[in-house]
Length: 236
View 1 (spheres, helix red, strand yellow):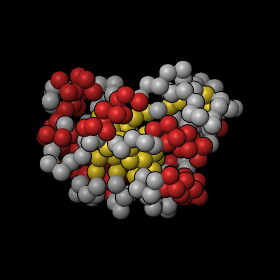
View 2 (tube, helix red, strand yellow):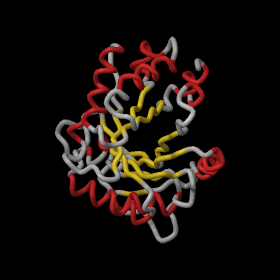
View 3 (cartoon, helix red, strand yellow):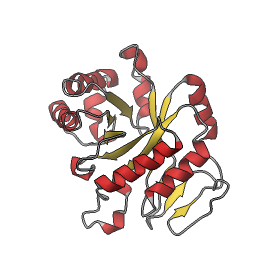
């Protein structure tokens, strides 16, 4: 994808290092690091799924944010565990939380939980205590779930899908870019529900989005979802 854009563009990925179980327990996809064990809302995998690929990303000079789907687990603890396991990788640039899967059973509407200014500030402080150069992203398709005013050290990720038309996609993403104009923003695109928008040319679709959102924000990242990434790459 980088070849089609600005020569200064940085190959960037979000690596999802945990999944959420039906009982709202966060399951890390690696064994428990030394000093940690399973707890009420945190469990682990028997094998490490990411060490080899993160080493490859180190070699290739990629930028990687490590994301969790937290369930009811404590965000500070999740960040500590994540960087205990993978903080030695040079590709790692920060930590991310998909708010759609945070305390999901405690929200009547079933779309996760809003993060407060105070919780966002505490999370950024913790992550920066591990590495002062790290940043934190929060992800959702609805801006009301983002911290109301806290912005320091934050990236805001829009994962809207089922956008219907290109015009609607550009309008929605442009609005997000403007709302968070003083911070970097990422747009997670390429969903199956939007295949009719990108199937003829994934790069042209991405370029249309970039052209629109950079009118309002110059710090933009495009993340293509893994569900269709192989198909999209074959069309580039």
